Length: 233
Figure 1 (cartoon, rainbow, N blue to C red):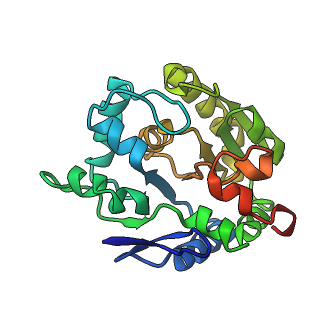
Figure 2 (figure 1 turned 30 degrees about the vertical axis):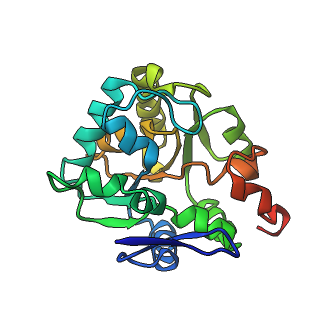
């Protein structure tokens, strides 16, 4: 796989996998038809945490050793669900290092699919499809502004420290909404991948949306967010 950047839009693309536009259409179609799936995303933060790096990711979440172990377990477990790899992690070689000595997931996609859709002015299609579904979000307080059906509130920083409590509350929300075939949207940093793995046995849709919702919830957390036409989405 290779990654390249569009100098005009700032949009990164991962070559050697299904084009992100096709994956975006696939995700919207599955959501529309009620077909359950899971989509995890691995980027620099996850790979550095998995490697034992000391420090924190771009949002300030620390690389805890037990989080790294949990991410390694999820990544190398031969997951059957969709696994997104961020183009920047390919560009910088972190993904290649992760799979140098043992195989990683087989169902690889471009992790930036929703971010790219946002840059392309298409994220509204994703949000409109979700309006017909029962949606549970897992994220910090600003995500509640998206006004979906249910929300599992997490700390702004180092949410991994509260993992057991968050998992318990997510289980409760899933139980309450299970008859509606809920969709879980994870805005929970590196912890998202562990939540997906720990719930891989549930017949429920879980999507790591990363920071894609931030600008629509009043938080410009990424450089490209400042260039979005938010009123046009």
